[in-house]
Image (cartoon, rainbow, N blue to C red; front, side, top):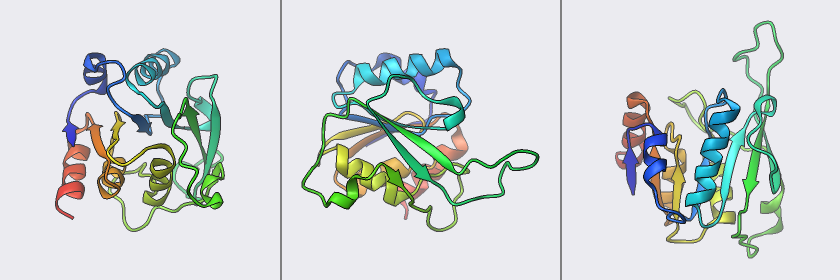
Length: 186
């Protein structure tokens, strides 16, 4: 279990090929096409079992993609001044080779309606229940999960609670401290 308070580019660049089991991440939604391609290539290089990437519909992650998922979020007034509010985020699945088919069929829909529970201290936090479902469907006990844009540490929290190792990278010190508090003191 590792937490880096650094720019993920610096860490990813030095990681060995096939050194982690799964990338599961929610990158910043304003990355350039060039940056998205660089990160995507790194994800696929270092991951044994593919990548799962959250993406907005209006600035989609890298194509082609193996499968799409959709997270229907609760409607919010955030960022709706003089424009329509987005209440759907896409989830891109790339070469996810693990498919834990021993789970109930209801766990395999590509449309998710999970809610973020409780007060959050990060503006883009994802629901624990959604991350748990993705992690259980596409990884095994003991696997190492990488989140290069860790934010509040939800992916690390779910990995820890489900017997997976994790590597979290977050360049913002404020969020890195929030993540450490959440993972080690709650």
